[in-house]
Length: 161
Image (tube, rainbow, N blue to C red; front, side, top):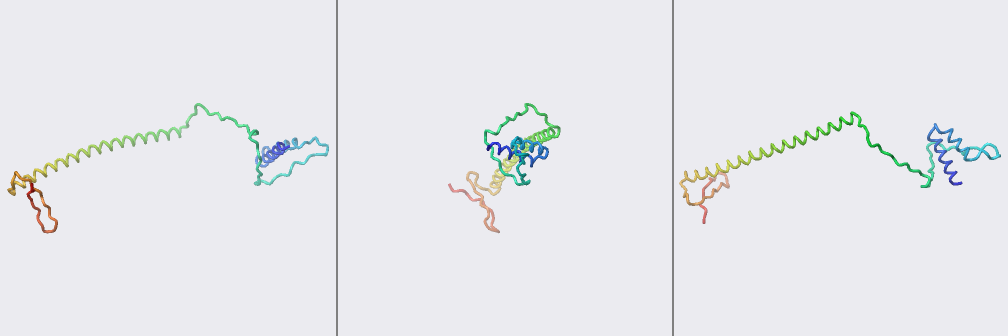
């Protein structure tokens, strides 16, 4: 009898939620309750008010699960296809920009390293010429002392051995 009660509750819910099936659900309820009783017409159970739904317990063996079948091939609409192509182009463009950026970086790095090397070479030559112009001993090593305070002068100091 419990299964019939559950079925009646389900049919009542169908009557309330789907107007197209109201009459069919009512007929099914009448058939379940049994119009063959000789007591006269059977009254359907009282209708529940909309919005107040009572949970119906369904046994797991009552549920029939259908396996969803997915298609092997599905056409992509033009808008989605265009979006995919646009994104691929944007990615390709950024990869190209990154390559150029890296190439320019390497080129700039080489130029800066070359500039630093030239300046180092020039500075060494300039200091050697200064030592000659100040008539310093070419067989000795000299260190340049930079001024620590305002008004002091830079000096060459002979390095002690």
